[in-house]
Length: 306
Image 1 (tube, rainbow, N blue to C red):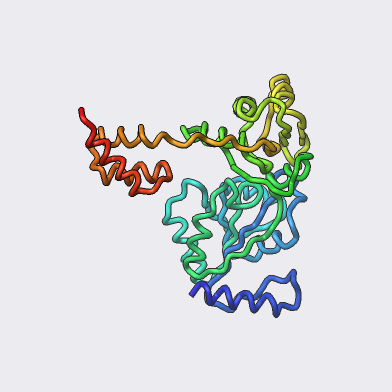
Image 2 (cartoon, rainbow, N blue to C red):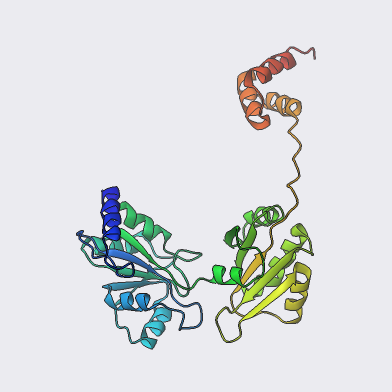
């Protein structure tokens, strides 16, 4: 069972002669390694990551063309297979089957740490479900690199990935106004000014922020200041390359919302044809009131002369 395998793994860790040595897998299954790759500078890859990329049986890559360039640079010839956001479940099933045969698989994204705004979470879940050991190989990560160099508080933060283009976008941006932790977002350069402008409307133009661009690359840039200052900068100098937005959390308390008008809600529910019991259940849940009291009021409303 997965828990038993995890216990065996924990015992093996405690008994390992070296904390840096990879544990020999005594189970019949292989190991799924989640390997972080450089986000720009190719020197930002660990010796352990390079060794494992050579030793595993297969590398599952978000884009095999991108990963093939990385492997060629380090003279690595491990077989590649594609595993990306549009892969169907059969591709993941085949990788799990490979692991169950005792072979090991390395999962990599185009850049950075797998599963963070990149595909992989479903494969990890399936591997754990099958009792396969999953091992993270730490390395480059855009959101943490941007955070620590932003000049904003790094003790408590929240990562919200890419904002959606759907109706949920407005609510996600609205929540930013009341977030007390440092907020981190990813954004494409073509939408950076638009997103910063939307954030300034809810957070205020004077909220402290930073944008990190092309991290670890030749034209790396950090723009720090207020949201209005950063917007002005990128309007004058259109950004290129993937961007990370960091916004300081608010110190203002979230305004209390007025409690719902239970009387109006109850009358509306009854007019919609709900029974007194059903109306009371609905309104009690919405208004946070005792159901019996709401039910009694529903009966009194129905008894009112017309």
